[in-house]
Length: 255
Length: 235
Image (cartoon, rainbow over all chains, first blue to last red; front, side):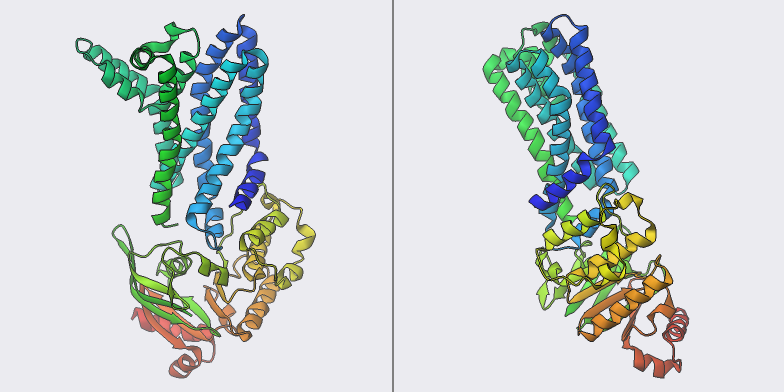
């Protein structure tokens, strides 16, 4: 399996898109830090951009990569390779290359400009969000028969997690504002990795105003430290579970 | 060597394989023929474990291939159209498959005959369709497998390269290997095949020795035999 990862990495690290993504992240980080006067403001700006860009790039790039290499997957499966190991190998290759792009493009500037503790939290949640959306892409690829359907599912999922979810949440809050819905809302937050990642970073910062409703609920219910651990734990679950589901489905899939 | 027992497969409403039984033994060169969409590729893919049958079993050396992958050590497969990672060089692709196989004995006849080693540094996205086919063929034969599965092997190859491949197939057959071929180029099959499997709409219409068929149909070319049987099959 190490071999598969190694060769997929060779292919991916030369991929123009991964290089472009790194440059884009670097440009975004530098501009975020140089436009704001304080580094924590820079981090906040960056956080909001990252939470939009990372999921989109991770999910779309993984989906296209998987569909474009479907014949290559067939070729490898005609070799003595188990499906589980192959799938895991491609997953590892994809997350490693996207994580590297993130570390170089956004991680280094953050460490340079901002407080290192805060940067580490940002980097950690950025890496997790990358993992999560690559996993989600694997699910959408394995449940779709052709490329256009797969891309559609991936875009819809991104749209849901990045935009629609907040809208739905807002709608529910307004409709049921007369009732004690805090716990339900905290539960609902657990179903959105993007929100969780935002909460993780904001809980570490002195920016309660930015926490938003779900973040405030989270802080209220679990406190700073526990809330942080819980949110991180949930993020890790989000990174692993969809991928496990996709492995299960992939083992039964016809190629 | 390879046995399909009551293999059934459907994609949604479309039944691709109806209760297919097939027995392939070593030393044979078997041509899978039939009109487009008759289930040839599905048969090949189920043997390779890419398509999982709804019911029935496939045995490789009397072992069911279900959930296994090690049996593929003994199979060399050449796809109809090979697609490889665009940014890898020929050398890297071959190196990768070598390391996956973990074998140290190589049959480099085709690599040498096609002069691929001189092009090891070229990236896959810079290659022509024919060269990619040459790479696929070389990979299929590289590990000296007991079974060769060739899906439209000569499509896209220039006459010289096709001839080299044909000679290689004949040589391998004489070494008591099992060779499964699908092809639409009937004239190509003439000196190659020893048995014919004719499929239609997911059924195997017949599986016979070529000599026997030649006698039955009174033709002395494989292409004639096939055409006559196909017409008989449709009628």
